[in-house]
Image (tube, rainbow over all chains, first blue to last red):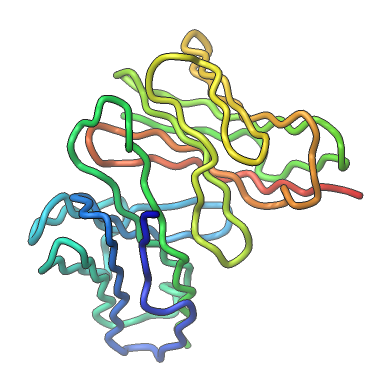
Length: 117
Length: 112
């Protein structure tokens, strides 16, 4: 089974802190993603990476940065946490190469519920 | 640009009744389409997917969906709802080799 593991299920941080959310996948997937989930807004893409050291901005990158030094690990960084970043954060991974219709889906971690106070 | 629209942010059905969750998409290329389920405080789990071939797709837990190109729809159905089906459901389309576009979700409530 593909496993995507997020380092924390619940986090409480103070405003202004630097916050690291870690994600590891064990299936040698090229693509990794960070989403933010808020009620009524669905999943919004923050950043994604299609290879080691490669990253692209998603729809809401402001206030976030990412790091992908190894293929299996993708970190989301909140440089200076703010209360409006209180949310559920979901990491996902998927195969990058075309597979003829197989293995096209994204696999998700359990999520990290971050509260900034 | 690709997009996904889920009609109805909340749907309630009685236990044993038909479940129908609606999803329409827009895509300039043949799409890969997905339905995911999310239980409280969990990540998303794949229910089913359409890539190519048969347009009626069966998934886990008795769910199925039909890809209708002419209607740009991929509605999710289950003949008989169970209490354990109460969750949030997300429709998604894959854009190119990596990006996924998600709908805003439909929360399903099952009434005893």
